[in-house]
Length: 402
View 1 (cartoon, rainbow, N blue to C red):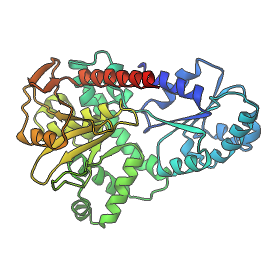
View 2: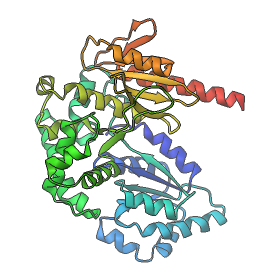
View 3: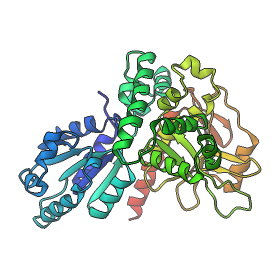
View 4: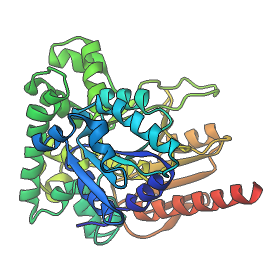
């Protein structure tokens, strides 16, 4: 059992909204988190993969009205998208009765159909929350061997908590097979499991690289538009992240293709048959694996008003992760897997292009020290704390101004 940092956020969102949705891939811990939240108030749990629970919702308006004094948790909601229309009527009735907020907590593997149904039916009535994998502050120690273990095994709780690297690797291989053979077909797309596995593995090999649809299409023997559709599916399911390039009014030729990252580092390693840290150290994916792991952990802590990008020019000026805080304020993050990180000239040129306010280098070590007068080298956990303190100070300043 891990204490998820998102728990208090979801409880607060329930006090302010009629419905809260927790989205994330299977086995990421949505149900466990929801049942923890249920301990704080009268609640009822329904699993929409369970035939008995589905039968209870033959007349959802009548059944849910019987439990109007409870928080109703609806798990695997993507299997019952028509339920959103019924929820809308119930929510509106309760609003007229002035019976507060926090009526429903819905859980689901994100998909375009789920988001479409809920946004159309529950517009203005639902708050979305994304549950990512375990982060450094949810495990035993945010740095050192525990962080390396999290990087190698990934953030799925069962994978991280496995009794050995071998057991963890086997769990992830089974997770990949189950997703391809059962979960994705249940959501509608009729894509052969072998084709999607090849595509997923290709993305692992090209972790952190520019998305090249024509190259992948040629390797798979399909059209470029088909490959783009495969990517859309993996992004919808929160299995792959598409990081967009920054492009604005600078007098440089900028890269405009997105970069793709498989979001869980453990899944990357299993797709590439990397069972442990020793094997990872000798693998060409080492640097990009660390880069994706760092980016995913940073992105999971960012509020919606901070926009993440990467920056790259045709001349080679590059920033691994660029955080846009609005009003022209940028932070530049360079990500290095080595213990003695060195900055390339292209990073400094890119920072000068954008007049970056703060520069950081994130590496697997634990110390924090200056690389030069305006760049700090630090650990992932230290950077997350840095950005959290900055966001807290900024929010306090906004409150004072108001």
